[in-house]
Length: 108
Image (cartoon, rainbow, N blue to C red; front, side, top):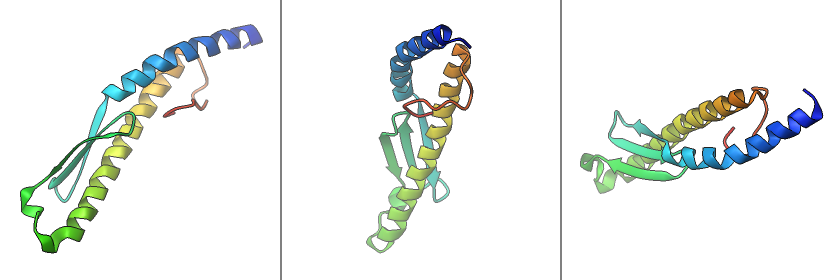
């Protein structure tokens, strides 16, 4: 790939990165733990957007268990969002004809 072509691709990538970042804020993934007793939803910007805890877990003696389940559900949601972000990023790079292993300044 010659330098001018590469610079053109870089400009195109830059112009589409903003759109992709906005799009990533719209995607969501939910993670769960404790057989679904704790559910966490996170968007593509890695922001926790929802948290649901089964009322049965709300006993003072179960506080540490609930905290662990919340952490596990959030981690599960985060892992799922990372996969979605990577898929979208790879798709953008493929559309632009860029190498699959190239790192982008966000999410990829």
